[in-house]
Image (spheres, rainbow, N blue to C red):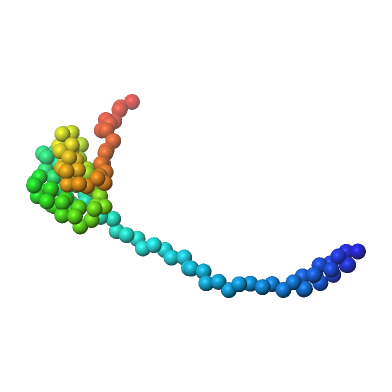
Length: 119
C-alpha cells in the first residue's frame, strides 16, 4: 500500500511542469553615510564663547552661525556650558543660536558634583 502511494506521488510530481517568469528585481543598496554638520559651541565661566578652539565675540559668532545656516539649513548646534558658568550666559548663547534661525539645538548637561562621603 505504501509502495503504491509513494509511486503515485513521484509520478504526479514528474507530470508537473514548473513555469517561472523571468523578472529583473532591483538590488539592495546601502545608503551612503552623510556627515552631519555639527557646531560645538562652548560657554566658558567668564562668558567667552568658543567654537572648537576658536574664541568668538557675540557679533562674530552670530555672523559665523548665519553663514553656516545659509550653507546648510539642517546644521546642528551642540551647546556645552562650563559647570562654573552662570545660567544666564548659557541662555544668552541659546538665544543667539535661535536668532540666527537654527532650530536644531542640543544642550550638554553634566551630573551634579557629589562629594565623597567618608563612612
